[in-house]
Image (tube, rainbow, N blue to C red; front, side):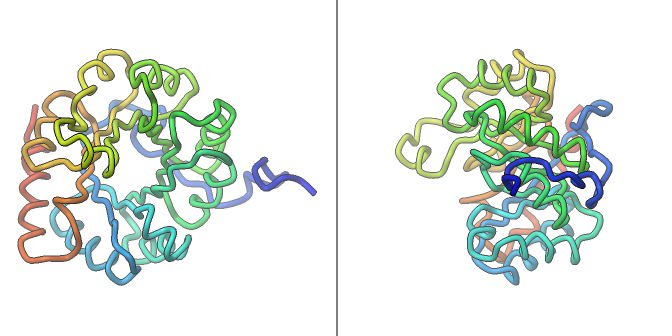
Length: 244
């Protein structure tokens, strides 16, 4: 029996989409993504509805949401938001092709894979992207040299390099921000760069001004549906889209 981590003989017969910006197509416009880091699908749909009204571009099925609810969370987001790109925040460390196919068949358009993963894992994710219309985000979290890791991602065909300052990392080192390596990474590669990790409104706009192609809004700015959230999201979207 073939390993589930390898391409199946009929892999190309499953759902195939059109690669979105960043998958080897034309120049990438700036996008704003929201992390749906909540516990239930109902909460995720409520939060996604607020984000969609505010003009947020990409909806992310957060890692915790996926752990608690499985692939059903992606399917629910796709049913309710048929026209929005959906990011599967799986932080894949192994099985790039296997998980790429899995999330694509559920309706995701984007998948994040750890840049520190084995080259074969990243190559597998890129193969899945080509077959199923995914965009692959290479998460630089855990990479001791983000610039070298970003260059490696580009060489392997990954579509985005993601500068990610993890929650526990930034709590332990409050002096750090997700923007710290942005200039160096932006200068080192030509693929789009995404920035994520505890961004404030001001930091989100600054990241876009300094060349980030995709900005991710999550905790603590986004903790769930709450009064004023739509206005905050709209503020970020408007400011990011207004930049030259």
